Image 1 (tube, rainbow, N blue to C red):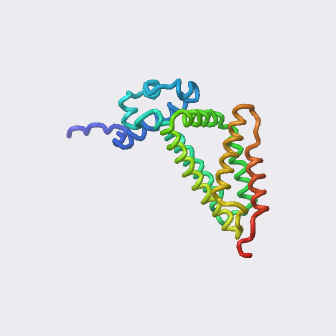
Image 2: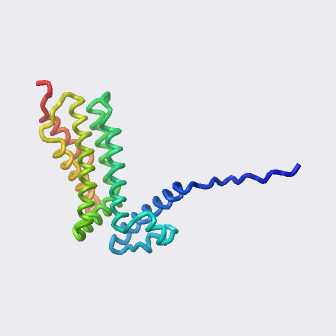
Image 3: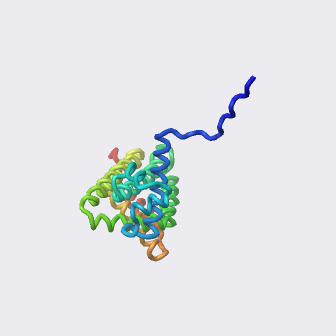
Length: 212
């Protein structure tokens, strides 16, 4: 009886899986190069070559360098919102436990100097390009709306009414967190976690009981 050919131990990726792999490699490489060389000092050719792909592969995934930069922002905002949802959303958790976890989470932002540097590149490019600025603002506004919903949920689950609109709290929280992270990148010192909790405790102290 003839022997059966040996089955390859290497599983071939599907076309969508290969494209997703290529996209992630391009994003990771671009993030590194933007941090190392600045946005203006990084070309599409640099990104494609260092990721191990052709420029054609780049354009199969992104319309432009600006589109890739926006995707980096969108991915970061989504991950941030998902992390906060895990900490804030469960109604059964005590308020003190939530605040402790928020302080620890915000403290991790101090160590992400690379993201702080990349956020500067995003802001600078938004100043230079009106089209990019519009897309940049849209992503930030969507993130602020998501945070506002989480904040509203945190207060409502405890029968409390925040002293100002949830959207205003979300915007202030984003400014505080990202501003302190940038300060950490510039000076090496910041107390993001502690300041976030002080900010939230102040709001909680001013909150009204919604049943009254």
